[in-house]
Length: 269
Image 1 (cartoon, rainbow, N blue to C red):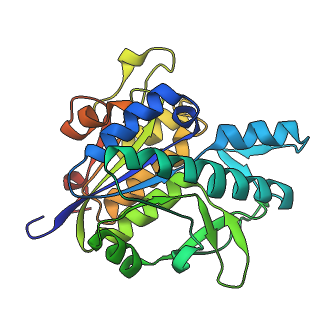
Image 2 (image 1 turned 90 degrees about the horizontal axis):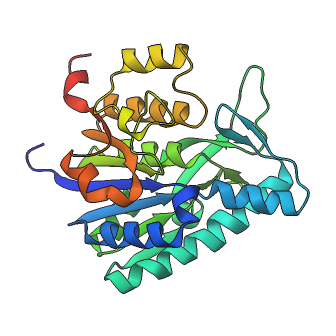
């Protein structure tokens, strides 16, 4: 988009966060991205491991975590504390002025408790607003926001919020002022036709393909909300969404790796 500054909005999940070698490689690549950038992180595996140690049962439905009071406390500790601050500290040696926050900081992400006709997800937040002026101000001051997947309702209640969803909502909100490229970095090379074959990665995927692959149960579990968020993002202004291996960030950006969803094909839909 002419006149718009490029903004990279990148999300990483628990599997790469748990692997120090791969994480360090990714963080170096992320810090080297030119210009404005935002990092959103998960940390689900660490949260699950801590819950198991504490004897707190975890329930996942279609890749989303059901969150009771005890699980929310774990999310606060792991996401907002341990993972967030470790990532911030690890980015500084690469010359990245990282600023670690969650959705409650600066009233960044407001949400309400998820309402579902048949499932009670507990203290899970569905996002209402993203504080775009605040993010814009931080970016303009040279900071790189590193955002933990927690939101709040403005009345004192924190919510566990899907990190892919936070990434999508931030990307959509910022696309009004920026040329946004959204990257979902995880442990696979992209969207796979065979989960056991990294060479079966799709270069591009459209919504009809997604629906068909979901119907055939080729795409399942955590990939479902990831792709749902990706299609929502491109339909609402994000120029490009890329899904692929986090530590291959330069290749994802230049299109030689990963699975892409491109805005252009949805422009007239």
